[in-house]
Length: 245
Length: 380
Image (cartoon, rainbow over all chains, first blue to last red; front, side, top):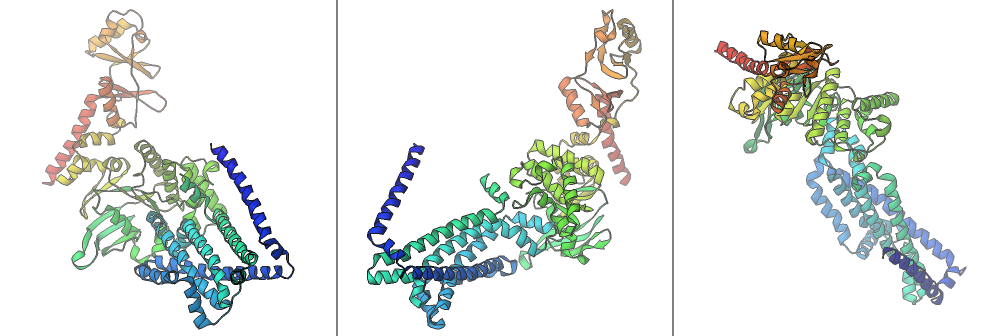
C-alpha cells in the first residue's frame, strides 16, 4: 500500500510540474522572464530582497540570542517575563504598521525596512533561546558547576550546545516570517521582490506578479532547507542520538 | 583531610528561615571514605554542597588540609575536588573522552597528557578506550555511564572526591558490581571521599566511617561496626534496622573467625576403618578430608562404618569453599542453605587453611556486642 502511495506521489509531482509549466507559458511568465528588458530587474529585486533578509536576520539573531541569554542569567531571571512581553509586542503589531512606524521616524529606503524586519524577527529567536536554555536539565549545569567550570564556559560548552536545536527552530520561524514580510518593504521604498508583486497586482499582469511571488516562495523553501542542513552541522551528534532513544 | 567546624546552614531569612544544618563538627581523614547517611532532608547533601561552595555557609568553617575554604576561590576549589552526582550528568553534547577531559582542560593540561589520562581512566573503569573514547553518552548503558561519571570525577587526580548518591540511579545488580569496582580502585588511589547515601547497606559497604544525620544534626559519627553494634539512640537503631546483627556479619571476614588448626583432619588416602577408629577415639562426629593440602569434603562416622576401601571413596563433597575475604553473612547464608555447620576455608590457590563453623560465627557476634557492653559499663 505504502509503495503504491509513493509511486502515486511521484506521478502527481510530475503532473503538477507539467501543469505549472503549461500555466507559466499561458500566462506569459516565461516570455516575461526571458525578456531582456525585464529579467535584469528581476535579478536586482531578488538581490535587494536577499540583502534585506540577510542583514535583518543577522542583526535580529545577535539581539535575540543576547536577550535570550541575558534573561536566563540568575540576576535577570526576574525581569524575563516583562522583557519577553515587550519583545512580543513587536510581533503583535501588524507587519504593515511596523513598516509604517519605522518609516515615520527613519524615512524611506532600506534602513527603515531593515529596522522593521529586525523588530519583527527578534521574538522567535529570543523566545526560543530563553526556552532552550531553561530546558537544559538543571543537573547538567549543577555537574558543570560542581566540577569548577566558570559561568561563561558553562554557557558556551553546556547550555548553548544543549539548546541549539530549540534555538534553531526559532531562527527558522523568524527567517520564514522575515522573507515573507520583506516583500512588503517595497511599500516604503526598499525594493525587493515585493516590487514585482505589487506592480503586478496593480497592473493586473499575472506574469509580473508570479515573477515576484515564485522567487519569494523559492527563497523561503531554500532557507528552510538550509536551516535543516545547518542543524545537522551544528547540533552535536550526541544530542541527536539522545533524542532518538 | 576535611574538617567541619561548627558548621551551620540556615536557608531563608526571618520567619521563613529553615535551619538545614545545626552546628556540625567532624573530620574526614585523608584517604578515608566517609558516608553521609540519613533520611531525605536530613542535611547530608547540604553538607556536601557546602564543601565545594555550591551553597554558602552561614556560620562555622570548613577547612581542607588546614586551609579554610572561605579563602579559596570557588572555581579553583571545585577544580581541586572530583564531583560525581546521582543523575550522572554526563554532557550529552560531548563524547566520552571530552566528558572525562573537562576538568583537565579547565586546568590547562597539554593535549597529549589529557589523552593519556582519558585512556588510563577508561582502562581503570573497564571500558575499552578504543571502543568508547569517541562515543556519546546516549550510546552507553546506565552502568557504563556511571563508570564514566566516576572516571570524570577522578580525571584531574583530585585529592578529594565528593560523591552525591553516585550509584543511586543504577539497578541493584550493576550497583553491587560498580561498588566493588570502585572499592578496588579506591584501595589503590586512596582518595579522601565524602559520599552521600540514603542506603544503610551501601553505607556499611562503602564507608570507612559513617556520619549519620537527622534533621540537620549529626547524630553519630563512627565506624560502621560501632554504628551497628552500639547505636547511640533510638533513631540510629531504627535507621540501621532490626537486622543489625546480620549487618555486622556482613562486615566481618571469614579470616577473623577461622579455626586454623582443626583436629578432625583425615587424609584422603587413609583406610576407612583407620579413619573410623580415629574419629571414634577422639569423639568427633565427622572428619574433614584433606588430600595434598586440598580440601575434598567431609565424612561422618556413619559413612565410614561399613566401608573397607579408602576414605576418598566415601567422601561427601562440600558444595563450595570459603575464601578468607568472604563475609560471614554469606557464609551463614550457605550454612542455612546446605544445612551444614562447618565449611572449609581456602586461600587464593585453593589450599586448605582452616575451617569456619556456626559456633565460631555465633561466638564472634556475641563478642562484638559484649565488647561494646563492656565499654558502656566502663564509661558509666
